[in-house]
Image (cartoon, rainbow, N blue to C red; front, side, top):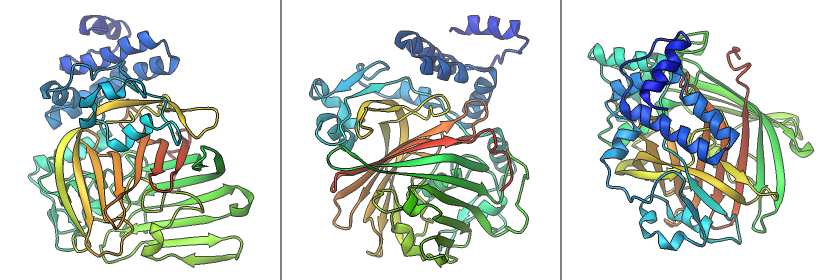
Length: 455
């Protein structure tokens, strides 16, 4: 739909047309409208309707104007192969004819397309690039913080502070370092994104465990509740939760299936102070006791046979600490990763076995590459490479290396992101171990109906 037609539709429905909508924004919505018509898929049409809403367009434009760019403008400036466009289908038969693809599709994903024996991807399909952004509350807070001439700093412990020397995540909803100059600044930009919401309810979340034979070995079912404790902008109570003035975030996971783990419950509170470990506790129904978990326990799988650890359940849950890790911006590039279209559908379509993919949709994203290197020799990974989105400030794709420097795990998830509000939850989560050849598929059902309830 072109701008003139869109204006007519909006005016006839009694909605004022936003005259400042950029041509780039109109183009990306039009790209999705054209793509949805070609595929004829109802879920593509549903997503197109969401991003074309007046509320979504207005919020997207306000973020673009403040940020000074969007994904479309960055892509327009890039020298990209003409073949890399929506509708491109990549499969085992044609992937070798695209040598340029290696620059945008990580080798671990290329291997999944080429290898049909384990966790094979029958095809990867390129969809139009979206424009992502956070909520209006975060935007307003960030604009005001900058307009007031306020700045963020990071101390020698790696703690993020506001201009008053206070822990920033306890006091400020503004996003720090939106033009990061160092790896540590980029790490805090990502960490400040948090869960992309004030409250989070996954009801339920299923963890499917697939083995080397592409057999579904086990499925766990759980519920997750999570909540920002301070600097809340979207869901009441706004500001701070009473009695949690030193806690950044808190929540719990409760397993309900299978029978041998039913009742396992884990709660966690994240303190702002670098040297104050998380309040991390697990109730073990088999022992009828509560166990206090140490920091090293966060490197354990969330449950037996799972690849996803407590440190990875939302891409990364490790406090930025330059005493323990080195942080470096390794470059700026574009990466093909799952789109954040989970509010309409899941972009990873599994086959009947549940352990291979008939199709995975990928979109081209502008990213910073953040390398986090372990300095202690005691962490489970020697290095992690996080591809941090330049619009959403969330990680699109991640690679984790063992202590020998060999690639161990890969993580690519899709968020349930609301175009009209900029609020987000999760939809799917794909993590695979390239050494053991085991992988997990997490399917998440956000409870948007009840997400405004206080915990």
